[in-house]
Image (cartoon, rainbow, N blue to C red; front, side):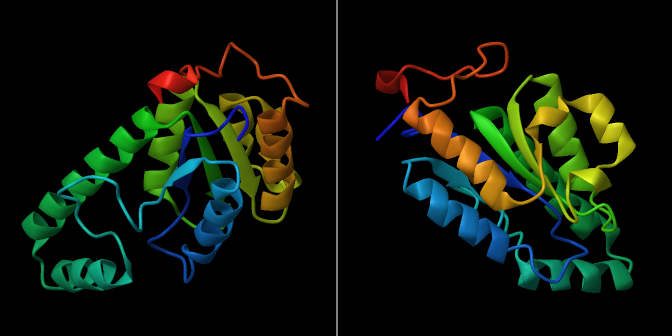
Length: 179
């Protein structure tokens, strides 16, 4: 295993207003497992007492919203938000998928948190880099924005093998014995 062995990444992207937030996460996880990277996936949170954030839970939340049970929704979502933001904190880098046509409040907050923490972010934009929201170009270096997951994964493979040297301004990797 290379440089990224036992590193953690968080897979950020829309879930609420999309029909498939899982398949890209499964694909990326399978590819990164080959490098020994541990992927945090909101569909399978790593915390002991996590709230579910899957399709079934989302249907329940929408039902409660329709019934005006806002306290139940708020309580559930406060824990989800807390766990998601903590996962950003724990990650060495993030893989972010944005579809500019899909509202994604949680992903934007997670992205903002990662930018403030100067985390390394590999962002894939639906439709390619040319569709990047203008605001995002003011948030992070555009060299970390990719047209598709394979382009981002290719760069990660090159980093893992040492073909690409990491930037110490953003990469804050623990020595392997501390991972």
